[in-house]
Length: 329
Image 1 (spheres, helix red, strand yellow):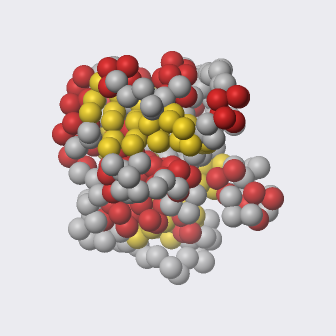
Image 2 (cartoon, rainbow, N blue to C red; image 1 turned 60 degrees about the vertical axis):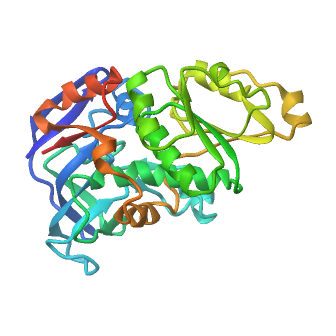
């Protein structure tokens, strides 16, 4: 089968490897589409993946074409989206129901071969069956949506909140869509890319701007979400949180990124600073939301490229051109 392969830091190719064989509790998925994500760039840059080479791709869906000897829950021909999370189920965090913080955390497409390939292996328990009306080539959006659902679980926001989102890429736009549906009074979006801001306006945000100063809201916002992972946005966002407000670090920053906090202000104004790590008890809910049309795939997916162009797709993603890019085997 054909597959993308991150061979070493900075080196990605498309190559041919043997077709996968499922273990007793695994299935083989004929991948319909695989989304690109910032995590893929981090892996290419030598972060996150414990070892290289690795087949990337943790956002994918497809049809089951092979099943292990002990699989009874699903059958060949079933259409599924795949939760990439692999938890050990034995560490203190797994036993506490916090598998996303697993001491031995692994993921399909990060530590084991992923969905940037014609076929991918997945544990049967990681597969969510999809209704017939959901397009498999769109269902790669379910994994990032599940991360956004987890973000809103962490926020536990109240009705009528004023929300500010840094970044209007895929994840920022998903947080916008969820904010609208969780009772926000207003949702403002910041980005330096005017084309992405135009998409945010089309999706019904309250205001857009390149900087928070342009919005002239000196009291700040009840909820501030960084969906960029960039230090300048994070640092600015920390200053925009209103009294009793919450700052959510949602974007994935690289290991070297730092920001300065003001401990007295956090104490005196009862500000919460929190983070949201990947998927936790949110994948199936995201699949259900996706099936109801919570996202318009035509808006979110800007490019569909063949698997053979995976290296070029990564470079396009790195350049910030478009929104969600998916590769189609």
